[in-house]
Image (cartoon, rainbow, N blue to C red; front, side, top):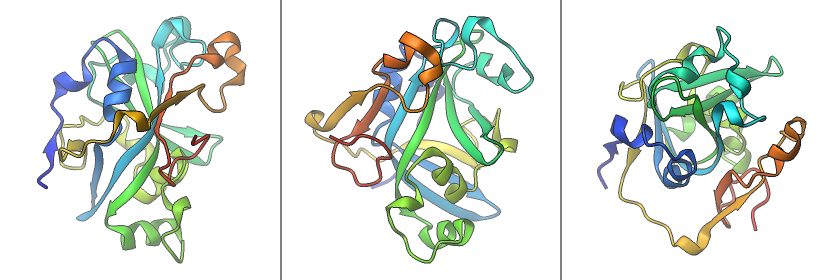
Length: 203
């Protein structure tokens, strides 16, 4: 099935929760140094900007790192977590509204040998792209990709008309945001039930 790159309008919708749900089943494609890797998105988390204590932009916070979150939707936000893991996020909504979606897990589709080489793994087990740090390493996504337009050939998200049964769509609280108090309980994590690449609760 031919892949069709998602248009900017997909990302610029106002409801970040809807955009997050709609990202499930889409394909993240990376073309780094002529090496193409791709995987189907099976787990995401939504972050609702200035009103969300779990968001890097809570309260209107702006830093050199997070400034890209205030761009028009349809660009990448990549940051380093614990000085080790690069985490890939999609900026949504319009300019000055810093909504974003963390992509937590992929099901590998293309370039698996390249993914193995990047991660140093011997075999393509579920850990290859399970979890946001693993998937960024496998896909060759780094901090320098922060701010990239998702309309570029180097990094984009596509639709191949794959559709899943709505009974497989599940939600839960986000992972690792206990510092956010009551906001940590928001059911803003979405995933495809039963997919073995999902990184957290999968029931």
